[in-house]
Image 1: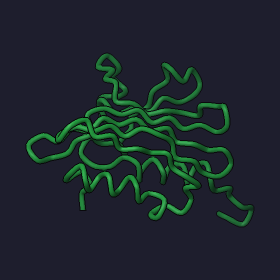
Image 2: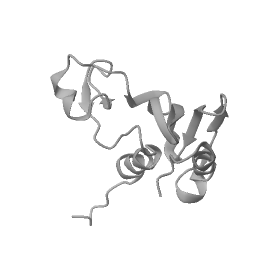
Image 3: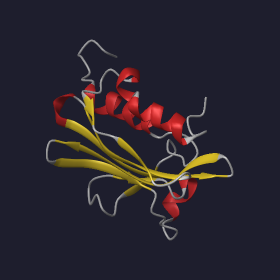
Image 4: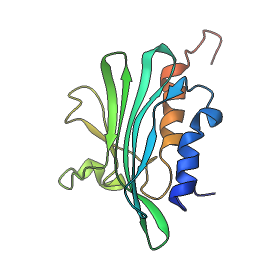
Length: 147
C-alpha cells in the first residue's frame, strides 16, 4: 500500500513508526496540517548510540494524490552531522542527473560533496529507506565471524 494516498494515512504511518521499526528509541515527529491539502512533518527520530534522524517534509494533496513537495533529512551522531539529504535542485551538477533532484551530502566537504539518491522519492514515503540505511550503516557492528 502506498502511504501517500491521503494525509490521514500518512499521519497514521508517521505516528506508527516506532511500532514498525523497533530500533527507534523515540520520535518527536509531528504532522501539522496547514489546511485540507497541505501539511508539514517535523521532528527527530532517535536511535541508540546517539544517532538521530532530523526530518522536515512538506506535503501537498494534488488531484487526490499526496506528494512530498520538498524535504530535508539530517543524520547526526551526538553533535556531529554525518550526512544529509535534500531536494534542492542542482541542475548544473551532471553527477546528480540520474536522481534529480534527490541527492545526499557526504564528507569530505559535506556542503558541496553530493551523491545521487536513488532511494528517495516525492511519491512514496522516504522514511523506511532512511531508517533502513541508518540500521544497516550506523547501528550494526560487524562481528569477526561475519563474512
